[in-house]
Length: 145
Image (cartoon, rainbow, N blue to C red):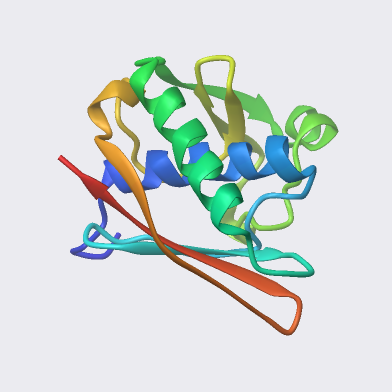
């Protein structure tokens, strides 16, 4: 992991991804850069978000964080995981046992990164900006203590 890696930010990324799925019926981010100070996620999307959508997205992510959901890991065989999850972003060296991170009943995703133990320790989620170009919606965000 990089020296700027932060389990709080990484857990927030999972919640943001699931919230985007629920609000817009789209896939998770196809690209992300997660660091302690600020992060970004890129989504296949046909437009920028409206101001109202940004506010609603931020509100929903913060609701999940405030719910103080447990963050747990489980291990599945690659075959089992492939039936429920998209494994295309996993590195080749991921092996035959896949780690799934679950944030309460809200999100589940294959992941090898570090996470918090409860969502309530993440802090307040703030969208810094959104931008759209060439079919890509970029969301930049940070966390407050």
